[in-house]
Image (cartoon, rainbow, N blue to C red; front, side, top):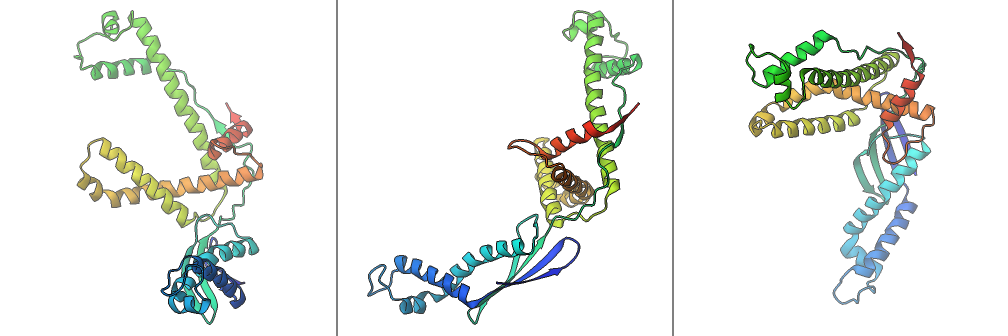
Amino acid sequence: MKVDVKNVDEIKRELKFEIPKDRVSKQLDEVYKDLGKKAKVKGFRPGKVPRNVLEGSHSHIAQEEAVKQLIPEVYHEGIKQENLSPIDMPDIQDVDFKDGKVTFTAKLEIKPEIKLKSYKQIKVKRKSNTVTDEEIEKTLDYIKQGQGADKKVVVDDAFAKGLGYPNLDEFKKSVARQMELDKDRQNRADVENQIVESLLKSVSFKAPESMMKKQLEHRIHETKQRLEQQGTPADKIKEDETRMRDELKEAVEKDVKVYLIFDKIAGEEKLEIKEGENLPSKVMELLLKEAKWEE
């Protein structure tokens, strides 16, 4: 097997394969042997059709089947030989069966080279979860408006009882607890975002188009489903699809880059990702433990 590798850019590779006659011939032998067991040819019993007769009536089918079987085998041997790590299935082109040889081209993308600086001791600062009296009062106003209550209505024990609480004090405690939980979630997300932004600033690499395309289609599908559930007309969703794609491109590129950075860290740390575990979550857990927390 002969393979020539062309570096199209930093992550795109074009591999030209040539499968020699002897290997093609050997594969054809196997195909004809299998065909001979199944082929129905007038005047011959199944399994007793001579090779030359099969070649006269089934040569095109045999060649197609041999190529179909050879390409995946040879492709995997080629990427192993060239020490390449494709991130998706290749685009197979220019397949040709000529003079007993088979040639084809495989276009693929490999994982980008990510030169990580230190990913430990990333500076992070977490905001307070404390809820102020002013914030509680604002929330009570929102709740009052949500209940359709008149501005003149006083938020008192009677109002609290109407919402299922024994008194106003218990109602305020419940609101404060919920607000603290919300703040806690927001603050955790903010800390994680600080880590992500720090990592993105520390490296520069091209996000693979195939990964971005797959992720974009996934995000578009999710957005369409959500709009359908909200009752948005189908023609309106279709009309807005181009705009949706443009708006999501930047976020998708960021998601792909972050995933690849986390994948790199998982490799550096030899993290074991068990079945059912989420790689980004496990890496984030490590980064939070190793972060430099500032007051």
